[in-house]
Length: 165
Image (cartoon, rainbow, N blue to C red):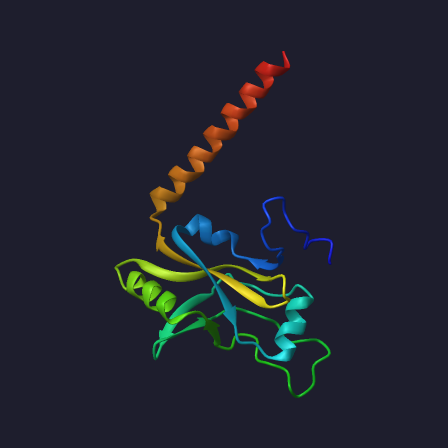
């Protein structure tokens, strides 16, 4: 078992995180999350095992009743040959039909979208993506969230100083 892939005390499955979309939590209000599998080629998996991927511009879309992950950048495998993949190709998400219908129903509401939050290897070595149903934040919401975090940090700092004296 790898160093990063240790099981936690709560008996949760171990995950080796390849990529996270940190900006998504700043730009969107996350309402629901779902884990989905991905249909990948061999060179994509090898590239992911090297820890190379970017979820920044990624989103999920509906095509014929199936969910597809688009604009996720998995760079070409360095030792690949003519079988190498294209970096930003559309990848099929593997989910149960009822999960897909539930997510699509919610995402059709105004202002909602499906975005990837993280990509990781599960315990069995399969690549999984955490997909979030998200609603875009307005600029003043982002400023307010930053202000709240800063106020919380200052309060914790003053409490720790008070405990130290």
